[in-house]
Length: 365
Ligand SMILES: Nc1nc2c(ncn2[C@@H]2O[C@H](COP(=O)(O)OP(=O)(O)OP(=O)(O)O)[C@@H](O)[C@H]2O)c(=O)[nH]1
Ligand SMILES: [Mg+2]
Image 1 (cartoon, rainbow, N blue to C red):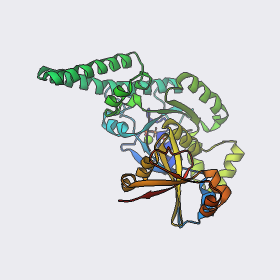
Image 2: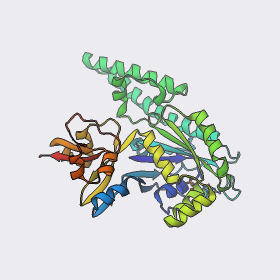
Image 3: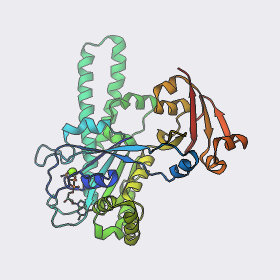
Image 4: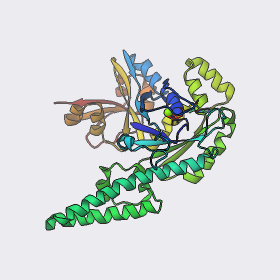
């Protein structure tokens, strides 16, 4: 899973990036970032430890999410305030977008000159995403018009249909309707998939509230949710600075501080569960003496597709999967016992993997 973090200058993108990746990229009161920061976050998962006790593996591997912290567009350049064309490709490649909006007051960090207003800034960023998509669509329509001039009859039909589709998407976007909210037939969805439109991606809107305002976080989150939530948009409110500081403590201290501050679930946990939700992901486990490992796949994938996540040979040469449900695995305490108690299942090619399955893939290449 690749998730890009975007937002206006000094909204706290890098601070939140550091919090979720436990990183130490430079944060600054005056915009200075010129390159994206890339970091990998291990997905915290309480279900791993009980499996580790059963299998006593040499190695434990968490699922991972890659976060890319995209610098804001240089100020005063061009029309765009939030998204620099330079990073459009990077955004297109991501599976989901996090929009960070400043909701903290801090005189030492200059704002854009018209005060702190998270809702306004989120609207600006959503508009930027729309604007980027319109650019892609307009270029495509131009191309279609050119091609139509010399197209053969068969080709002409296809191009005309595509022209109609893109024209419709453009009209929708111009009325402020994201591609997420435009109803596409499965066939149309396939046609636009390759363009990796930004307004077609799930979005997590994050208000970066001040460390003295964490008691207001729930209200802010509720407000954002009623304004922006639904249809692939999730919302959160957290204090980036506090989360970053907590993430740099050792785990025991972090836990203690978090409890004393009543800071609730960690920013990392919260972002992770939102990322999973946004991308409709589930986790399955592979377990053995060498490794206990968590894997992430899209909900609804079959056993061979899940196997392909581990290795393409496993998908190609898939024979069957041996599956034990997570609760059964913990209850029986060993594969042998799971077999004995009849909760060990042999599953074929059409088996749809479910949350927390413990899976062994048998394959032949
Ligand atoms: N008080 C307070 N300051 C914050 C918070 N989050 C970020 N800051 C400060 O705001 C400034 C900008 O933070 P960054 O994380 O660098 O923001 P950014 O969005 O990455 O900025 P650019 O990459 O320059 O666009 C830094 O001085 C941070 O310490 C917060 O929750 N509270
Ligand atoms: Mg930054």
